[in-house]
Amino acid sequence: MIYLSRQQGQEGPYPEEEVRRLHAAGQLPPSTLYWRDGMADWRPIGDLLGEAPSPEAQARLQQTAVAPPPEADAFPRYQQPAPRLNNYKSLGALKQTLGVLFVLVGLGHLTSGVLMFLHGPETESVAAGLVLLLTLPLSWGTWITTLVWVYRARTNVELFGARNLDYGATFSFVSFLIPIVNLFIPFLAMRQISQASQSPRDWRVKTPHPTIAIWWAATLAAVLIIMISGILGGIAGYNSAMQGTELADSRAILPAPHVFQALFQVFCAAISFSVVPIIHTISRQQEALRDEAA
Image (cartoon, rainbow, N blue to C red; front, side):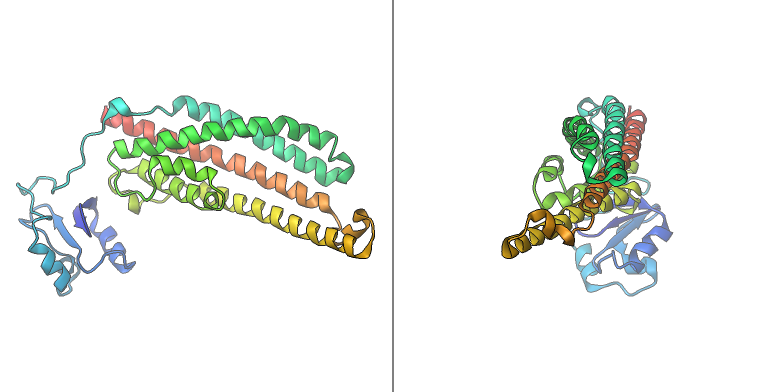
C-alpha cells in the first residue's frame, strides 16, 4: 500500500493501481511524494511511475514538513487521531424519522401532481389544493429535520478522521437556506459526506451515493419548471395589458398551465423519494464506522 503527500499532510493508504489512476487523471501534482512499507524515506512520485523526479518534488524532499516515519513499518507522519466517540452524533433515530417523513411528503406531492394532470385546472383549488395544504407543513418540518441530520452527519465524518473537505458542518447546514447557493452547494457537500462516510481517510477516491445525482437533477428540473411557467405567465399578462383582453384569453401561450404545476409536483415527489436512500445509506455507514472504532 502507498501513502501520498501532495501539498500538505498525507493521504492513504492506496493500492498502486489507484495511484496510477490518479496520475493518469492528472490529480497528482509534480511535487507529489510517496512512501510505502519498506522504504526508509519519502520519494518523488516519478520514481514509482518510472519517470524522472520533478524539481518540485526534489525541493520538497529538502523540507522538514514531510519526514520519513520513525520505523519502517510505522504509519507516516500526520497519522489520523482516534475518533472522539464521545462527540459522535447518532443518526439512527433521525434516519428512521426522515425515511417516514420523506415518503409521506413524496406521496403528497405525487398525488397532487396526478390530480392536476388527470383532471385539469378545475381540481387545482379542490382536491389537489387540499392535498398540498396537508403536504406543505409536513414538508417544512421534514426539511428542518433534514438540516439537523446534515449537520450531524458532516460533524461525524470529521470525528472519524476525514480531512480537507470543502464545506464545514455549519456551511453545509446554512447552504440549504441561501438562494442560488442552495442549487449547488448542498449537493456537493452531500457528495463529500457520502464519500467520507465510506472511508474517512481516503474519501477522495470513493464514489458518492448515485442517488445524489438524481436528487440534484430533480431539484434543478423543479426550479426550471417554475422559471418557465413564470416567464410564460408574465408574457401572457403583458399581452393582456397591451391588447386590453382578459388575462384568461391571453393565456393561449400556456395551452395547459396545469401541466406545469403537475410536473412541478412530480419533481418535488422525486426529490423527496431520492433523499431517502441517501440518508439511510450514509447513516448506516456512519453507524458501522462508530462500531469499528468503539
